[in-house]
Image (cartoon, rainbow, N blue to C red; front, side):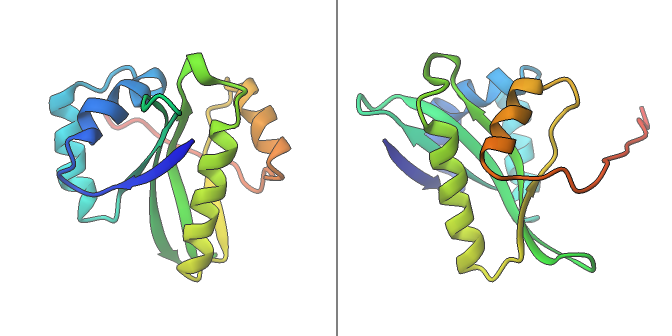
Length: 143
């Protein structure tokens, strides 16, 4: 497996990563994804892709480094998804380990993410990865 941090403007963002990301975020069109890349890039949004031995993208992670008053500096994972055809093959673990290396190198105190309450399979994975539930996430729709 090969893990690659994709730079802004890299065509692999839409050609390789987006189809995998859409397994988690089916509402993303290519145009919407491009607009998110444009706006999110200035907010630190980055993407990392995992490729199998045949060169197919089998995992995607969207992430950013965030400074706040609670954790001081953390690596926040916006998206973490393994292609359905590659689940339970170590892709998610490899992506998280890669992101943890980024977090440590950047002086982060924590790696964190939110996961929908209905995603019980993902929760089992996060617990196996030694992650803990430390807070509730609240939201209020505005549209």
